[in-house]
Image (tube, rainbow, N blue to C red; front, side):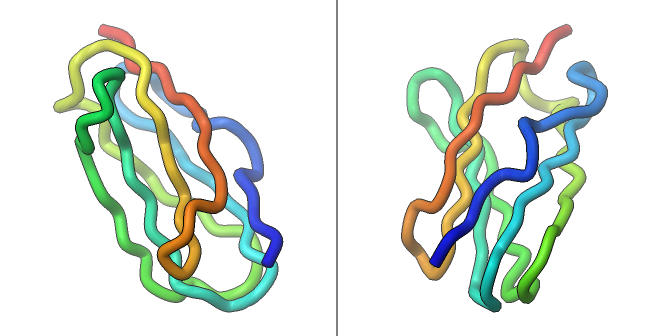
Length: 88
């Protein structure tokens, strides 16, 4: 099953980011955000969004400044990872 991030997280690095991903077949998706130490900061479970391109708005106002890893999982398996910067 092929899946990917459409592009890196983008938006206002001070307050939020838009996460856009592509799923090529209907499947259960989840997104986790990890800080630089590997601690999970957030988990988003959009459920079964269906085939196609999907976007989620992430509120980063409560995150400290830093670099975060954003992991997309499909059917519980790691599918794609990207980095996201939060600045203050």
